[in-house]
Amino acid sequence: MKKTQSIRQSGKHAGIKIQSRGEKVFDACLNAFGVILVAIILYPIYYVLIASVSQPLPVENGSVILTPVGFNLDSYRQAFRTPFLWTSLMNSLYYTFGGVLVNMAFSTTMAYALSRKRLVGRKIFTLFTVFTMWFSAGIIPLYMTFRDFHMLNSRNAILFGFAMN
Image 1 (cartoon, rainbow, N blue to C red):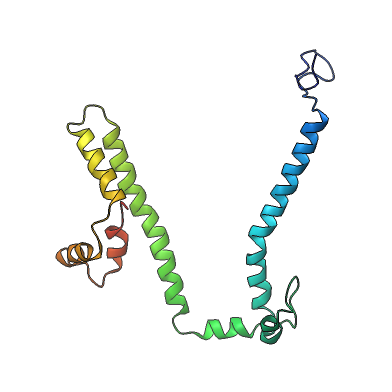
Image 2 (cartoon, rainbow, N blue to C red):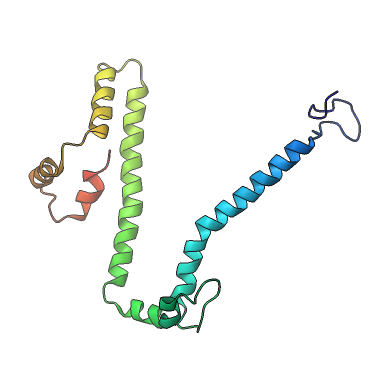
């Protein structure tokens, strides 16, 4: 029996796969690569956090690398004094959650209809949908559509105007 095959006996080692030395080295290298990749991805987020609570001068000089230098919350105080912060936050939440709801409603409805084999013209509707997703008409026709539906300067124009894109 090879080392990499499962042991099929009943008892203490039933179903345990024995790895060869090469497989163990490969797994260790793969795990090390994964840890390094996660660190590369998460460090910029961590840096923004520690830079936001550090004094401005050490951040500009490049002294802030792993820990905050001169703990300071002035940037947060200034941000919360901005008059439109809460409006911006609410807009972000509205567009995010509203966009997801509208897109999901439109996408699932269309997907269900197009999944029915008896739908007359199903292939044409599918082709039309995919074609308009791949090739946009442009900004001027989009503006004219918003204007014709009286959606200019409307928050709903963002939700419904880009619902199937």
